[in-house]
Image 1 (cartoon, rainbow, N blue to C red):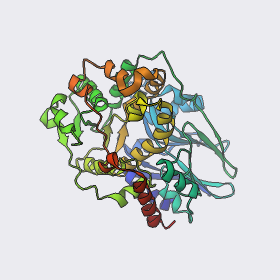
Image 2 (cartoon, helix red, strand yellow):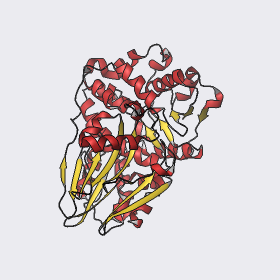
Image 3 (tube, helix red, strand yellow):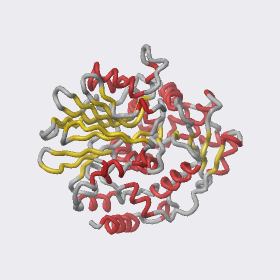
Image 4 (cartoon, one colour):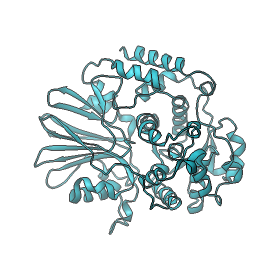
Length: 439
């Protein structure tokens, strides 16, 4: 257990573990955000001997009856879970991976959120013996691994793998919206524990976006905002500016982004322009990403993570998810890519990448657009209104300057991959990854 936990020390600042039985341990690495005292460190053990541990956040915990003064989000959530079981998750706005051990039944219940924004991986070590982790690296310490050739072939062909495979045959990603139930000494079962994402027409999306941003500014440590001068991050920034003066903004010169910064009206003392410097970080990026998957954003995202760490921030807001929900990619002009963008690209590329590359530098990334209400509201918008984010542009005419609403998208992406064939780049990454991992 110590060997596994040593592989994820970067994900927090404090670590604990408990021995569940002589053959079973549960460890946790915590980045304190809500409730900084060590009394809120996991694993939690109640009077019945039940054990709970999780990562991620439940943003609306103080909105629950009688909890306005609550210190810790997981403390509130666990109260609901002890009463309601699986049904408790639907009561909260957040993202998570969560483990509950029932002492009477000796069952573990292991949960991923509705988009697996906090990924989990598992490995079968021998019949009826399993290990689970937030990253792949800890599971590799347990025994040798072999290459999954179908995974690499799929990545070479499509750019990423659209299922729960990993580069290694022995290690599998737990699907989104899934409970992995394990009784000690038994084979696990898997089931969806929440109603799957579906279009919802009843939501006022503007109100939901404002509420999601407000909730994600709640923190016991400083919160920063990533803002490029594009539509998505500007919406978040302007909402924040309307509710508090306690914020800080990071911008990254990216294409023509720098010329739009004056429109953001950020006081100089609240603005840091990050110079990502050299992007000669390919092997580091592959290591932290735990895969050769890159559609052009891995290197700059890792460089961004390193730069934010140097500035001393551990929580940042970003506009991630808006392109997938509201037709922000060029392909959306040719066909309706929304469902694939949500259930494939977010789940199997963007969200694991963002979690790992930001957590490599102990940074929790909060994405207001990925609140469940907003995702389901966007799914109900017809394509003609979504394309090129027309719907989103019309939601905030009072907040977002026309110069930013009407500008072209400038993705944080390797410049060469905007212009050249990406196949050779993918093949080079696969070769480098396999060489580094000796598979």
